[in-house]
Amino acid sequence: MLVSGLEIAAVLFDLDNTLVDRDDAVRNLARKMYTGVGVTDSAISEESFVAEFVRIDAGGTIPDKRVQMTAVASELSTRVNDADQLLDWWNREYPAAFSLGRPTRLTLGGLIEISIPWGIVTNGSPLQQTVIESLGLHQVASSVVVSSLVELRKPDRRIFELGMSLVAGEIAAGKFLFVGDNPTADIVGASDAGMKTAWVSSGREWAVSGSKPDVVIESVGELTRMISV
Ligand SMILES: [Mg+2]
Image 1 (cartoon, rainbow, N blue to C red):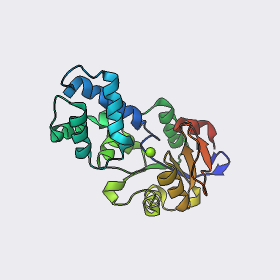
Image 2: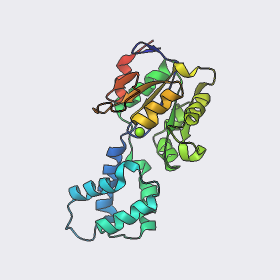
Image 3: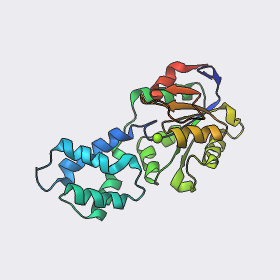
């Protein structure tokens, strides 16, 4: 197939804020916590609680979620204030907070229809695998690679090479398209591994000098209209 003029035979996708809207999922979780395990008093509005929860989450950059839940308990005065209990709650509720948008489903379905193999390469905890399974993506993707389970992290080129070999070992790196939102981990990393790249900008400007994505898209759904067979 051609993607914006590039000859592409296979695709790898990032997960968070590429295939799924993690920011939205974390807001869903915060709302669920506000009304569920809850707050000690009504001094904080749901809106501020959500905003503070999102701030503490820091875009998912805190590797130890127990540390994060300790901060949630102390800073947000949750009714349940035991970090381990909150951590159990997070692990249980997190995967269900995600959904797959219709435009993304159409893009993935379109690739399957034209027999273009695709897979997922994501950084993060083993919980990423649970998110992928709860969305049913493991049944339709050719492969799924979660950094913590293979002990390699993007932008390490070896994790891209692993993803490519699991999707289609016979296809050259230059015929692979990597689609991701993180300029360094996804785009620079995949490019260093020899892949073509599509950056999910979500309206941002590209700010890494010395390299740039082959394709810029606002969201994954936009790929559908850029593909020709
Ligand atoms: Mg991402």
